Image 1: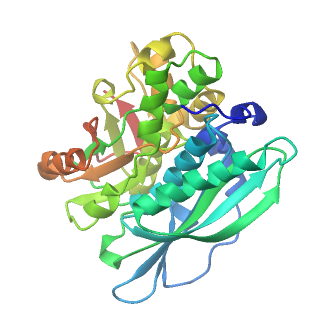
Image 2: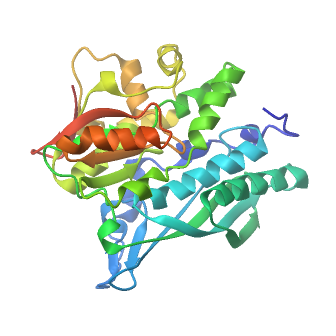
Image 3: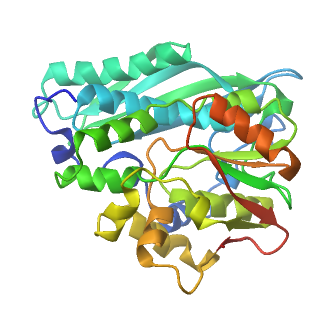
Amino acid sequence: MNAPLVRLTSLAHGGGCGCKLAPSVLQELLANQPAAGPYRQLLVGADTGDDAAVWQIDDKTCIVATTDFFMPVVDDPFDFGRIAATNAISDVYAMGARPIMALAILGMPLDKIPVETVREILRGGASVCADAGFPIGGGHSIDAPEPIYGLAVIGICRPDEVRRNADAKPGDALILTKALGVGIYSAALKRGELDGDGYAEMVASTTQLNRVGAELSADPAVHAVTDVTGFGLFGHAYEMARESGLSLVIDAAEVPLFTHAAAFAQNGFVTGASKRNWASYGASIVLPAEMPAWRRDLLTDPQTSGGLLIACEAAAAQGVLDKVRAAGFAKAAIVGRTEAGRPEVRVA
């Protein structure tokens, strides 16, 4: 962990995907907005709350476009750039596409941050894009009161490879590719309670590219995919349930966690975003009576650059899981199933 010239997290009121507006606030802001219009080529727009927009060019090609940016979740500028870039690219992978180009989004308080620090943020983002095999072709920067960095990412895929959050089918198995705990570890980091091993675990997860999403898009047994970010596992699972018109059942005991996430959660390391998440969609979550509050906090914990939630045919689930693990996601697990019924998330 390199020593930064300034603690980036001290300059921001929130960090990572915990900065996202609460789901209830976002829905209120988007209510009554004009529709995108009768564009036949717009296969995925804002109506399903999916990870990216999809525009069909011709019978063989779709353009997938997204943007994502946030304030620092760590103090090391190079790591911040890497995490922010990985997180933005994830939206394209979650739609089943391959990223081909990005534009940088940068807002910096240059009266508080040395130019060298900003260069390290940009270098971190560029290094991730290079690893993913595409360039940052330009971008835009502003003078801002808090540090902000992210990307607008463009990807491509075939029309039959688009994977929405709205296409899960009853009886599907649910696979989660990364462990939960980013928000809780971030809270521990800000309080000086996260050791070097914990920091390394968090950075390794948040900089792991979700490129397996593009690899799985050619598999017809994979029906729906979304990435788990600021709304937590519960929030993004509920979006899949709502848009697919079915129930999702989560086996809490099977959900993978960071090594010390449960211990931190039991000791009160919970983000404000986790509480806002529960306030926004808790009415659509059915919990067992004996479930402790700390476990609920883990399932609402905002994930920065989190894993993919995949709905696939139950008979193919082990094979899909094997592919995910072979791609480097050692903690990936089958965490539940889908059922016909009212749109909700139930915890088994």
